[in-house]
Structures are given as C-alpha cells and as structure tokens.
Length: 259
Image (cartoon, rainbow, N blue to C red; front, side):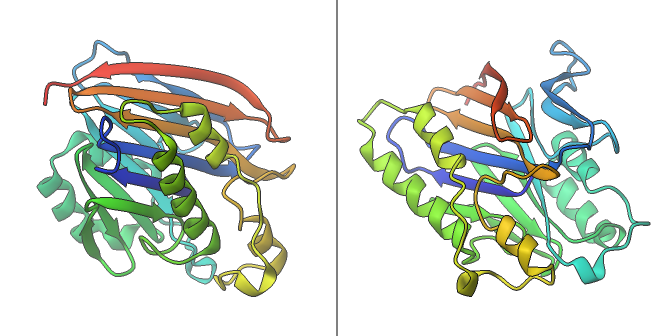
C-alpha cells in the first residue's frame, strides 16, 4: 500500500472516509479483496492477499477493526532477510490496540521500515517504525505515503487538498464514490524541483510522484474506498487495474457494525 487519505469527521453522514491505493510490481501475484478464510469464520478478514508472502496491505475484520500498511522508503536500509511487513496487518486485525502496540515496540527491528494504521474505524492510530511513535488520526484530513504521516510530499498535499475540496461539493447526505475514485486515479506527476529525496533514482522518484502510477513494470494495482456512516454501515469499494492503468475488476462489500 503506497498512499492513503483519511477524512475524519469531515462529512455530516460519513464520519470516516478512507481512500487508498496499493502500488506494486505487476508480476507479484495477488488475490483481489475477499473474505478469508470465509465470511462466516469468527476470525475472518476482508482483504486482498499477497500470494508471494501471504500477507496483505489493507483489511478489515468482522468487528469493524481496520489496518493498513505503507512501506517507509529507505532503500539504503533494506534488508531482504527481514520479515514480510504484510504480516503486520494480519496481526493488527487479530489483536487489540494495546496488544499490537506492545508487539510493535518489541518486534519493530524485525522488519524494514513501515507505517501501520490500526484500530476501530472510528478510532485509528498510526505507528511509524522510524520514529517508533504512535499518532492518533485526529479530526480532520490526513495523508500517509512512504514517509511520515502528514508529510509534505507533493502527491500527499495534492490528494489531501482534492479530498477536502471534493467533500465540500457533496450535499449533507450525498457521497459520490466515482469522484473519490477519480481523485485516486490522478496521474499528475510532481515537478522535478518538488520531488522528495528518498534515495531512489530520479526517474523512479518522478514515476512514483503521482497518486496513481502507470508503467509496464510497476504501478497502482488496487484502489479501495471505505466509508462508515453514523449508524455503523460500512461500504468497501475495490477496484483492480492492469499495466495500462485500466480497471479490470470492481466489487463492493457492505457491512454493518453496531456502534
């Protein structure tokens, strides 16, 4: 998962709106979002699956618990012998906030750099493995990519601003999901002078500077839009893309959680 935007208590009907893109190499085998092992299992999660390492990048369980992961871009510090970070989402979905916080503190050195968002949909926290700090997602707009929460990378600023502007156009009860997908499919790249310096080659820095990434080898594979209303109704929208950035599959999941 490479970029997420959060709107917390910014819409009169939907106090939680999450927009997320997962960027990955196209050759990495992936299973689209589904309930696993199955919806009726008390420990079931709704998530896509990384078929190479067995973990996931974003998911919910059937108690309205959410988690999502982004890698911290530190190419000079990558250790291929460390554990797969996708397993952290599974752990966060299976444990309480206190349990996962304690576990992260103990095991952070076992993983390459990451950000992990976790908690009930209406009470989310972000853990940054570099600073080793927990930050609550407070009321307002937030963005998360491959650096710190609410950093000022161009695409983070762009997406957060566009999300705020988009929500302002909605009436008191409406929410245009297609407009949110349009935001997440913005392929505008940043100007060279505004690119973050994360230690990767300039051509890759340029490619990765857009919210939606299209290239033959690497790009945006999935977009998820998640909304929760005041009554506990949750909608999860999932779209998958090919190497050309064209949508090849779309699905919607409707859930209800007692608040």
